[in-house]
Length: 114
Length: 118
Image 1 (cartoon, each protein chain N blue to C red):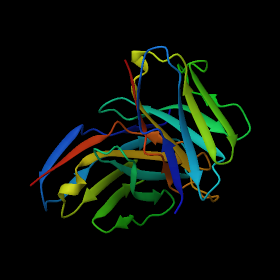
Image 2 (image 1 turned 90 degrees about the vertical axis):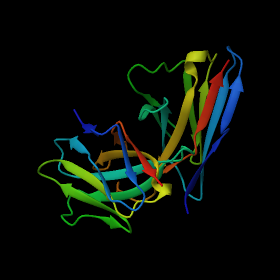
Image 3 (image 1 turned 90 degrees about the horizontal axis):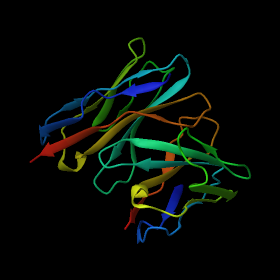
């Protein structure tokens, strides 16, 4: 079965701190794509970052970066210099090959405190 | 950029009413549309996958006669909650894969519909 596990239901950090959200996944496929999505209180789904499994280099998007460990099937998200606007639910997800269906984690609620 | 427009954003209606939710793809053709249901503080739960011109594929446990999905054109998919009851109250979201052959293309999400059945 293909699954995503996010072991941290909720986290909170002070503004400007760095925070890492964990994600592990399971699939027997070799060609897949990993994503982190953000869902703020407005409930819009916003793509934060994505990673192709065949790429060894970790993806980065400004203050957001990932630590992709393929052998361990781990895909953690690091948020540097956290801002109040980063407060949201964060979901880890992946899809396999040409199948667009996303497999979702349970989410981590991140609270940035002023 | 590509956008999925979802309407209505919020609907309150009496028990027994049927409610239609529309998702329109703007500036791209959505051959596939995913329909999700999300309970408070939980993840997205896939209900069904619709493909233009064919019958939708429902996930296990989702009543197809309760949640009617139509995908009659490349730009419009609809979800109708028939004879809605309070237990159908939830947040419903649609998403369509971006165009291109690479499946790392971002999904385009609607803004969601908050359905409240009294």
